[in-house]
Image (cartoon, rainbow, N blue to C red; front, side, top):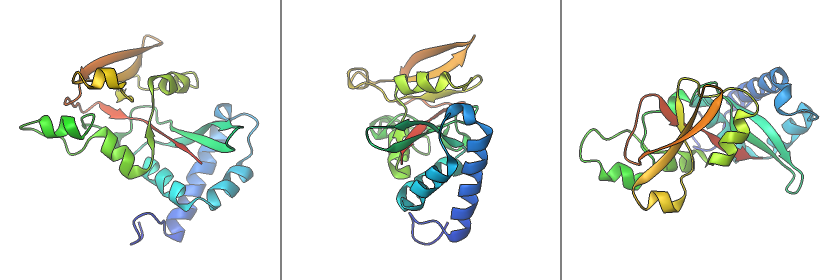
Length: 188
C-alpha cells in the first residue's frame, strides 16, 4: 500500500478493479441487471471507498455487489468469501470485551477493525440476505452486529450455516475462536 494510509497506489487500484470486475462477471446472479462499467465509473470517484474495498479484499472478504439502493444511488458490497474472512478471525467483539480479558487477549476486535477498515459489520438481517445468494460459513462462523440489549449484558451474537439453515448463536463478547471472524458491508 502507498504511504498515504487511505490511498491506493496506481498498481493496487488497477489490480483491485481487475479482481472486482472478474468477481462481478463470475457471480452475475448476485447483481442481475447491473453493468460493470457503471460500477467502475462510481468507484473511480470514491477513493476512500476503494481503499475500504481493498481492505476487505486484503483480509480475505472477497467483496462483491449484492444490491443497488435506488433511493441513495449506492451499490452495496458484502464480503462474499465462502468462509468467514481469514484475515479477520480470532478476534473478540468490541474494545470493552478486549479490555476485559486479563490474559490470552486476541489481537483485535470486530468493532474497531471494521471502523478502521471503513466498513459496517453485517447485521443478522443482512447476514440472512447474504445467505439467499449462496451457502456461506459452512465451516466457520461470523460475528454480526449485536443489539445493545444483548451487549449490555456481556453477550454478542454470531451466525453460521449448517444443515442448509442459518443459525444465530450467542457467546460472551470477550470470546474468540480461530474459525470465527466477521463479514462487512460497504455502500458506494
